[in-house]
Length: 562
Image (cartoon, rainbow, N blue to C red; front, side, top):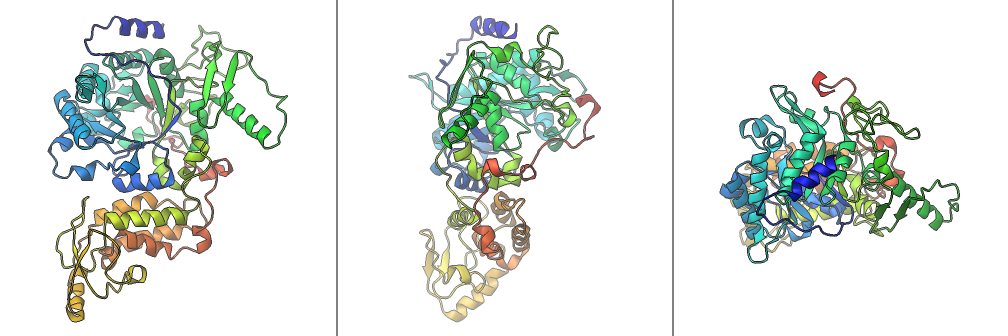
C-alpha cells in the first residue's frame, strides 16, 4: 500500500519542475557525518589523510552566514584534495537558501553535493529559527526550500543540476507540546512531497527527534533506533537513494548494514576460498537470490523479494497481516530480539535494498579516528590504505597545519591568525624561536607566503620577548587543530599521554605562537617510537571493546520515547 500510494502521488503530481531521470545505481558509499564544532577544515583534512574514498561533510552552515559573512572561506572548507565532500546548509527561507546555493556553486564549485539539514533538534535551530528538524512538521516550507535550491543549482539551458541537492532528516518528530508524528505514513508522505519537488537522495537519521524534551546530545542516543523503517523507505521509493545514519559503531557494522547479511556472508566465503579455505558446501544458499561479489562494485539481486515477504516491521508490530515467518526472528520497535538500548531495532537486512546506497558515521570518527584508516580497503575494496601507522598520519597532518597556520613566534606583526586564510607575515632573518627551533631550526620553514627582513640579534631578542607575550595564534585555532587527533590513540596502552601532552601544550601561552604543527610534533616526541610506528589494526582484527558504541546507556530515556 505504501509503495502504491507513493507511486500514484508522484505520477499525479502537477508540479512544473523537471523531475530528474533515474540514474544507474551507485557503488555503496561511506559518509563521515556533519558535526557541529567538529567538521572543521582541520577535521576534514585529517580524515582525508586517513581515507581518500570516504565522503566528507562540512558542519551545517546557515544560509544567512553564507550570504552575509566576510569570512566565508573559514566556514566552507573546500579544497580540491577534500573531494568528495558535501556542504550542508540550514534555513527555512526559500529565497535565502536558494541564493546561498548560488554562492556555493559560483564561488565554491568543487562541492559534490549540497544538503539541506532537516535533522538538527537544537532549541536555537528548531525552536527559535524554525529550521532543522522542525521542518518535518512543515512539509510545505521544506518543499519550497528544496525547489529554490534546485533552481539555483540548475543550468537554465541544459536544465541539469550543476550540484545535486539532497536532504538529511529523521524518521519522525515529537513536538514540544507532546504531539507525535512518528508513523510510517507521515514519513512516507514527507519524503514523497520532497521527491515530487525533485529531491532524489535522502540521508535518514534512524531515530525520531524530540523537540524541547531532549538536548541535541540526548537526541543522538535516547530515542530508539529503527533501521527497518529505513529499509521500508527504500522499498517505498525505488527511484530514490537512501543513506542510513545513526548508531553505527564501526566499519564492520557499516558494511553489513548497507550490503546485507547474505552478501557479507558470500564475501567471506569467497575470501576464504581465495585463501585456500573450505569449498563452501555447507552454505545454505537460496536459489531465488543471486549475489554477485566484486571488491569494488558489489551488487545485489533479489528475484523473489524474499526479504520483503518476510520483512521486519518498521513500526512495532507484525507487518505481514499478523503472520510471522517461522524461521526468522520478529523485529520491531521496541525490539526484544535485538536486545539493544531503549528497544532499538538495529537488525541488518538479509539482502540490502539496491537503493540503500550508503551509510554515515559521525561521533566515532572523532573519538576513535584510527578505525577509519581502513575505509578504503575494508569498505571500498581498495588494495591498500593511504597510511600504515599513526606516525605517517600525524607527519602529514603536521605539514598541513604548518602550511595553513605558519608559526607566529618570530615576527613583529600584530595581526592574529585565527581564521583561514591567515595573514602573510614577515619573519626574522637570523636565529629563531628558542622553543620551536628544535624542529624548525632558523626562521625559514619553507613557506612561500613567509617573507623575511634583516634585523640584528639584539633587536630580534627584544622583539621575540615582546611577541611571545602576545597571542597571535588564537586558542580557538589551536583547539580546532587538535580536536581531530585527540582520540588517535584510543584503546592503545600508553597512548593516553599523547592526548595529555596536546592538552597541556595547548594551554601553555609560551608555545602557542609556535603553531599547532609544533604542538603536535612536540606531543609526538613524548610517544615511544613503537607506538607511533605500530601498524594500524585491520577492521576484522579489532576487539569488541575497540569500537565505540553510541547508544543510550540502560535507563537513560524519556518515558514518551519508548
